Length: 156
Image (cartoon, rainbow, N blue to C red; front, side):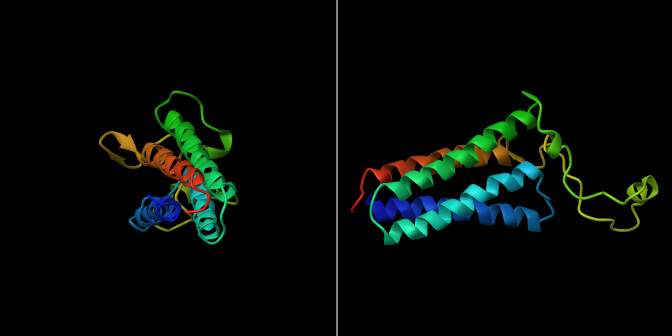
């Protein structure tokens, strides 16, 4: 594969993962805080891909690999939290703002009182016993490999 093809494949992979995440969200799978963190490096990789198609050199593909490895690293941490291998972050215990709500508001299921509370240590969806965070990790590692291959071809 040429540098251009590798960059298109890597950036398109990040785009597909982002679209998939938004698709799951539209289906009612609200993201937790760590799920949201995993999206930012993919958005960065897409932007890097656009730039790397216009500019030669190894720096941008290496930055694309770093973005993919960043989301993979967050995914590893998230998977560990989901599987109770280690403790998660306090900030990720729940997502959504519940300030200003009293106990009656929180228990009242007859009305929508805000965004759903999603804990990072609960698996919302699995395929082949792997969570979305784990799939993100595995696919992102593959995308990092594509970026690194693109970095080996600075001109083509």
